Image 1 (cartoon, rainbow, N blue to C red):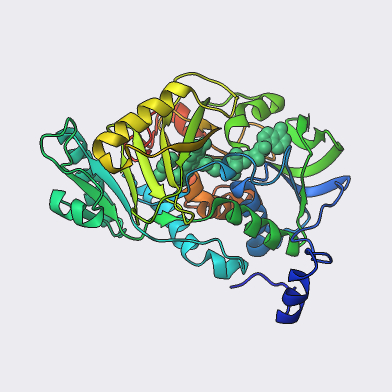
Image 2: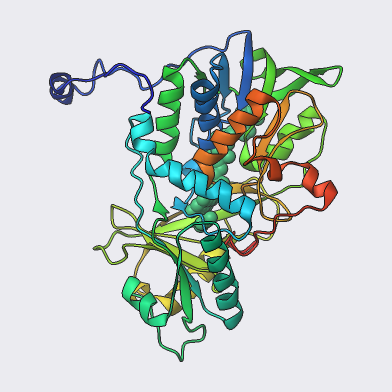
Amino acid sequence: MAAKRKPRYSIFSLARNSMSHHQGWEKAWRSPDPKPEYDVVIVGAGGHGLATAYYLAKNHGITNIAVVEKGWLGGGNTGRNTTIIRSNYLQDSSAALFELSRSLFETLSQELNYNIMFSPRGVLMLAQTEHEKRAWQRTHHATRLNDIYTEWADTKRVKEICPIINTDPGARFPVLGGLWQPRGGTARHDAVAWGYARAADDLGVDVIQNCEVLGIDREGGKVTGVQTTRGAIKCGKLGIVVAGNTTRLTDMAGFRMPLESVPLQALVSEPIKPCLDIVVMANTVHGYMSQSDKGELVIGGGTDGYNAYTQRGSFQHVEETVTALVETFPIISRLRMLRQWGGIVDITGDRSPIISKTPVDGVFVNCGWGTGGFKATCGSGHCFAATIAKGEPDAVAAPFSLDRFSEGRMIDESVAAAVAH
Ligand code: FAD
Ligand code: PYC
């Protein structure tokens, strides 16, 4: 169902505004000052925080919500990722979560009345060692049992799907096949944040940028509010959705998290004519690629091997990634790289996220998405909203609680995480 909103522009107003340097264009969302008190405060206006606020308002009728953001909305990992969407995970609980999200992406433009440019162009995970082949074949069987459509592609089929791949059997890492998910793909990352922000704003949610949380107030083991750069805000419930900054926030609330924060980086090449119409991931050699609508090759590699908050990546990673990809895609060997950037990702021991209540009554966390949470934005928001509204995790979120680390109930997705870390 589309979010309830009045049409803002007619064909005439669009024509008039195109001549007037956009004067008089209505803002897509308001910029309110914080109110003294809200039912729910969400920290972090990335895709996950904004989606959570939207589903809280739409599915649970809770609209007295503030989403507070220290910078600009979508300026964290949401605006820094390489936009890959897939649900080819091994464990049943992950398959349920990531497939819920992938399927919500299919209709998200209609739901939000905002073009998020979902492009189900297909995602191919290459197998370049015998061991990797077995791991992906196992995942293929698991996804089929979970009713998620994937195919096992042999080398000939890989070449058909992706003609620019070097399938020479004499290569150092020969292509032995691949796991193909035709309904995976990409979406425009910042449009996802903007679409959720506008739809949440329409439902009465206050999205407050330039508002950093500096402290978390508690009384008798229960949250009472937050201290921010724009003053104190009281709240009944608090959702922490800040990706690589999670442990900084949970330190403020007085409990520890099983997370590490490390940089992950990506880069784009100069634009070239269309040559790659799928997403391809080569995990043994640590590189993956897709082609943007502008023609740039969007490329990423593994995480840096140290903790940091720099939102950059190390230079040797650029070199390693490109060197590795040139072996499998010789066509890119003469391309110049245009720019490179990084984000800080929060990684759990089992490479699965945390969607959970916490030791502080009224505080909920949504984190640990590591290198792979963009694809989960819709599903994560959907089930985190239910968890906050009901005070207990819903069926999809339940396996991802914090308790699993003390109970030893790991959800091992180190192969599906696909990016080495
Ligand atoms: P974010 O978008 O980071 O939002 C958190 C927000 O919290 C930020 O805007 C931040 O400013 C704010 N914040 C932090 N501290 C405070 C505070 N004290 N007060 C107020 N606000 C605060 N995933 C995929 O599925 N596919 C991919 O292809 C993919 N590629 C990636 C490539 C790179 C280079 C990187 C870095 C990540 C990639 N990811 C990918 C992972 C994905 O980007 C993240 O998992 C996802 O975007 C996390 O979204 P989020 O909303 O939780 O976090
Ligand atoms: O989760 O598919 C993914 C991914 C690709 C690159 C970074 N994360």
